[in-house]
Length: 240
Figure 1 (tube, one colour):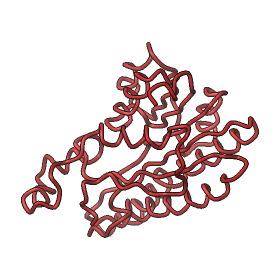
Figure 2 (cartoon, rainbow, N blue to C red):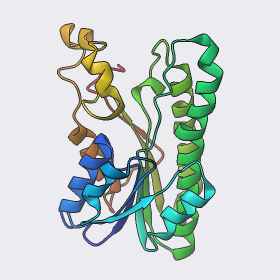
Figure 3 (cartoon, rainbow, N blue to C red):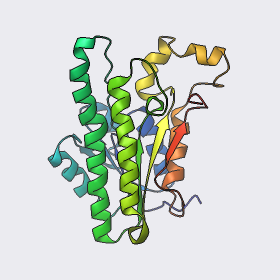
């Protein structure tokens, strides 16, 4: 249904990165009206200023979330790409990494989602919310405590929100859990050869592309979609 999103207002929080930009390109091509936010990298956001609303917003801040949602008064959809890998190999730094991850990977995104859902309920707008998790929240990967724990909590919180928004509100809430993507936070790991063994042993046929996630986002934003409260793994089968 290529015209189903034409004219609909969709917020892409943290949408200027590798995964977000691919989704933005797809949705823009279909005629959606986009509002894209960034936290720090204003230069990377510049490419979108001629085509969309661009808003600086730190999702960990109530003021930042309010400013972003105020920029989309007719919001139909919300997709949250914002995240932090919270990587550390030093046990002494784990506490700090957990705090950062909790704020950026769980609190900011789920608070934004809940605040968006409340606005959609008040306006009587049926719509869709999509949150981004990770394969590390679906399966167990050593060394991922700080990152995976917050993302796993995000998945559970999103399903609770989906239950709260079902029925007359008709707001669908789903989660995408990407695998090893040649974009975004996984690029450095791919370059280091960390995941080469999954190609060599045939676990996955290739590394993921940003377009794989973009198509999943588009699928979950489809107005006639019948899916809510689910986690969609886009990982080529790695977590199997």
